[in-house]
Amino acid sequence: MKYWLVGASWGGQDHQDQFFVKNGYWMLGWGAEDQPEQFQRGEQIQVGDRIAIKRMKGQGSSEIRILHIGIVKGVIAETNKVICVIDWIVKDLDRSVESRGCFKSVHGPYDKDEWIERIFCL
Image 1 (cartoon, rainbow, N blue to C red):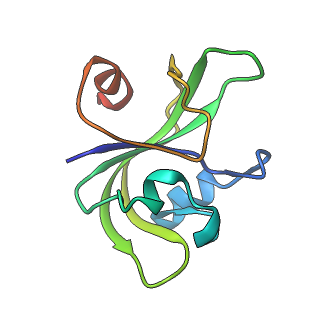
Image 2: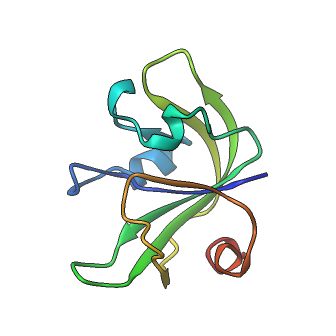
């Protein structure tokens, strides 16, 4: 099991997180040619992985907000997008944590450590 921090703001402003949670999925809104480096290397989100939607706290902040936490139930790979079916187990959370540079669309995979435990603890 791995841990992923993901964004849900298209273009930095168009927040999709409530839509994703309501509909039970998360999608990376990038085309295949623009996907983050780890996806191009084949490090994909897997069934059973944990996922958290995060949002920047503001320009210059060293923290991010954790908004929703879920478990990956399925991954749709027949498309040029990354689409994951998610069981959102914690919704509308407002947890502040150190960013550790997590300002892009996808960060991970992470193994469990103290920082990840602060993000994903229930």
